[in-house]
Length: 196
Image 1 (cartoon, rainbow, N blue to C red):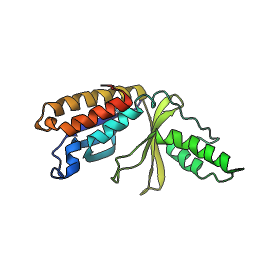
Image 2 (cartoon, one colour):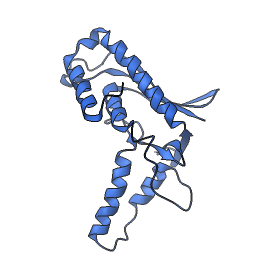
Image 3 (tube, rainbow, N blue to C red):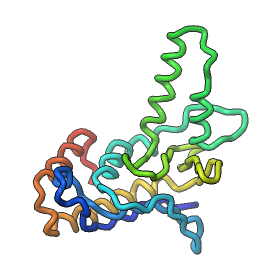
C-alpha cells in the first residue's frame, strides 16, 4: 500500500523583518507518496509557514480516518473529479433544495482539502474512499485528474511524529523563543484539541 507522508524541515525565514514573521515557523514542506520501494512522488515541495500545515492537521486529524466519502457515482471517479461534477449540478426544484445540496457538499469538501494559502501549490483533496485513503487533484498543465490510494493510518501517525520532532527542534532553536508563535500554537491546540 502506498504511504503518504510529510517531511518538514526548519529554514531561515526570508521575510524575517515583516510583522507576520513573528507568528510563523518557516520551513520546507514536502508532501510525498512512496509509490513503491524505488519510486517516491513529491506532490508538494514548497517553503512556507509550517504552522499552516499544523493547523490543517489539527483540524483534520480526526475527520480524515473516520469520515468516508459520502457521494456515489455510477462511474468511479477520484474525489477531486467528484467535487467538480457535484458543483456542476443546476437542476433544483427550489431554492431550499439548492441551499441544502450545496451545504452538504461544502461541508464535506471544506474538511477534506489541503492547500498552502497564497501559493501556486495544487488544491489537494484527501479523504477515505472505499475504506482506504485517497489523495487527488487536477493537474492544469496536463488537463487531467491525478489520484493515488494510500494507507490513512500511516499518514496520520507519521504526520503526528513529524510534528513532534519538528516542534521539539524548533523549541530548542533560537527561533523557539518567539512568544507569538507559541501563543498561536496554543490557540490552535485549544481550538482543535492537543494531539501531540
